Image 1 (tube, rainbow, N blue to C red):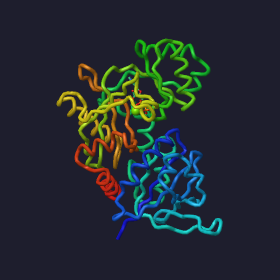
Image 2: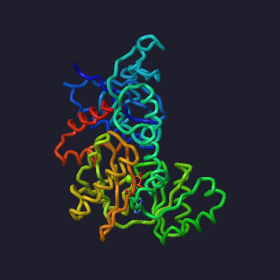
Image 3: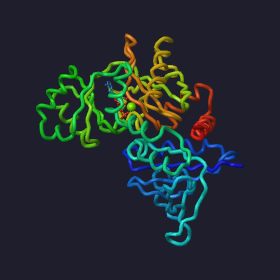
Image 4: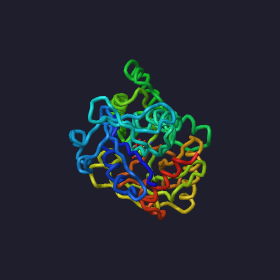
Amino acid sequence: MKKSVLCLFGGKSTEYKVSLMSVCSVLPALDTDKYDIHTVGITSDGKWYSYTGSLDAIRDDTWHEKTDCLRRAMLSPSFGDGNLYVEGETKNSFIPVHIDVIVPIVHGAYCEDGTLQGLLSMTGIPYVGPHCAASAVAMDKMFTKLILNNYDIPQAKSAFFTRAEIETAPDEVLTRAEAVDSYPLFVKPANAGSSIGVSKASDRAELLAAMRLAASFDTKVIVEECIVGREVECAVLGNEDAHPSIPGEINPGSDFYDYDTKYITDTSADFIPARISENALEQVRTYAKKIYTVLGCRGLSRVDFFVTKEERIVFNEINTLPGFTQISMYPKLWNYMGKTTAELLDTLIEYAETE
Ligand SMILES: Nc1ncnc2c1ncn2[C@@H]1O[C@H](COP(=O)(O)OP(=O)(O)O)[C@@H](O)[C@H]1O
Ligand SMILES: [Mg+2]
């Protein structure tokens, strides 16, 4: 019998559009001989709709205007209920659709930060990716750093600031931020993604502007030492048996790997394997597996590092629901390891259903 799979896309997050690109790669790759696929789109203001329209309308972000293809939809938090409820012909009458497994193709706030995962765990329906606590910790770069500091994971020097202190005591804040390292310094919101709100500051004026910008995306801001090196990413797959891929490398071809470089311009290039020594590749894999395990991830995550010219390896961040677009490293790394994207999705679904 076919498995009933619910794919979620969109989401009330700054990475809403990235999710649209991801789901356009995932939906065609899911094997329709094995799966009955149901799709729920979450609008950028957080409304859930069962969606039966075309991929093109997802791609150009008009799916939410296709009223013929939209029905209100919801999950029940009643444990073990196992259904998606889709509004029928009569307003407020909902028809149950049995779901075996949920594949969240969403990123960022409300989606990848434990919020959605709490709801999905409540339903009792298995779902792809880390559960609530691991997602919440991995989304928050400050919490991630603080935990990994206890496990000998090399990280950039950093300091943390609150939005309130940036507003009320900028001089004190700047003095403490400048104590992290000499310029340039990297500034980022603790909770964001896709480089949104991330800047490189070369002097005090830029630093304050960068901190204010980061604070407009989150209540916590991180100032970091700038690491000059290659950006190396490792895809991890599995539950307690975490399997790290061969690491890949992104060369942004711009000052740093910002949003435009990621999704709009075409300057970035990638290299699989990363152009580092065998020894450094192995070390990255070992760190990636350790970080994944320590944070309690399951299903998948992409663990990102910098590797300097001297082959100093520095952990940067972990993404628990990494991008799945045509150009995304996570599926590419598994393709390189010999798994098609369809096989990768089969494996992720199997892990979701395994304790
Ligand atoms: N400490 C740092 N040193 C050098 N470059 C950095 C540093 N932190 C971030 N960057 C650059 O900014 C990009 C985005 O930052 P990152 O921490 O990965 O946030 P996001 O979650 O938005 O991807 C990185 O891919 C890298 O190009
Ligand atoms: Mg990143």
